[in-house]
Length: 188
Image (cartoon, rainbow, N blue to C red):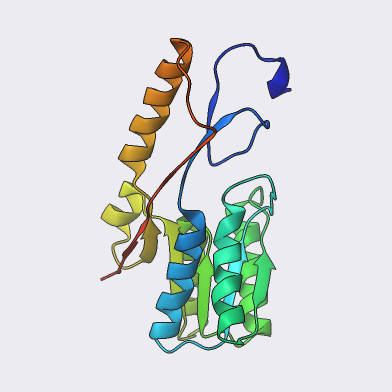
């Protein structure tokens, strides 16, 4: 559908077409950093809770980063897919089911909202579980400062997206892919 659009397009974290310019954060490094953080805190049985596994999305690299660290350390990987379109209640039920059937000591969630649900469920189940999220939005920073997360440079990403779109509108040439660095935000 996107190939039929004749207007300039710049995508955030999605590969819409082979010709679409994509802006993303360094998802691969973020996945590595999250997993390394869990290992540094003593975790050995680490799962990743991921949403829809869209292989056309740069966000899939979060999982690849997780897998690369575990492979390097010869630790078992546990990829748990929790579809993004599930309601909060269904996600909570799925998370509780997974946590009750497994003995994870660390969980890397590919988004902060799932990370918050995992923390909440683990606390209600009296499980001592280390959790790292991914996004680092202002909402999480202000209302859930206890969450450790991989923080994307959201303002810089937004500025770059707008700048690239304006350049495309003006007919200027831009690259196909832009990637900005992430950093770890330790929760309180």
